[in-house]
Length: 129
Ligand SMILES: *[C@@H]1O[C@H](CO)[C@@H](O)[C@H](O)[C@H]1NC(C)=O
Ligand SMILES: *[C@@H]1O[C@H](CO)[C@@H](O)[C@H](O)[C@H]1NC(C)=O
Ligand SMILES: *[C@@H]1O[C@H](CO)[C@@H](O)[C@H](O)[C@H]1NC(C)=O
Ligand SMILES: *[C@@H]1O[C@H](CO)[C@@H](O)[C@H](O)[C@H]1NC(C)=O
Image (cartoon, rainbow, N blue to C red):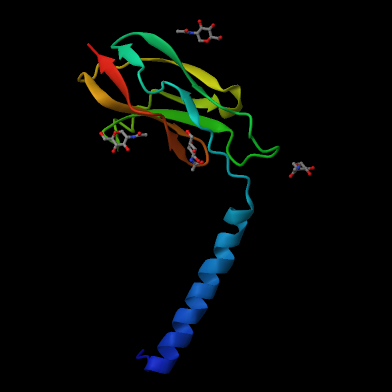
């Protein structure tokens, strides 16, 4: 089927209307993206150590969409080994979860990304061998 310009813009309009309407339920959810409080700038972790990643849950909405959290390591802003997160399936309202520092290349541009509804990353910190 061919569209004339007029039909095409009506079609586009309907499409965008549909996009807006179908996005609504998402916008109405209580999205909770807690800020990571540890590790913070200046933190140094050694490979193999255990540490509690912590985050601030004080602004948690009453009904949150996704209570299940996941913690992923990132280096230079790139998620590392998303298939093997440092932790997953924990209650994000707990505010902390103990992880073991994986055997990664030492660097000072690591961040921890906490996923719930969405992701929020920590400050850059250092991992040493
Ligand atoms: C992520 O956390 C920071 C504080 O560490 C906060 O300023 C920012 O708003 C958070 N991002 C989102 C998307 O909530
Ligand atoms: C992490 O926090 C829990 C609960 O407070 C504590 O029992 C545990 O020793 C902590 N782990 C580390 C590595 O500090
Ligand atoms: C939270 O969910 C419960 C049960 O669905 C509902 O009764 C309550 O009104 C909700 N509270 C808020 C603040 O949305
Ligand atoms: C971490 O450092 C990188 C540069 O290596 C920078 O692009 C990024 O914004 C920093 N992340 C944070 C959360 O400060």
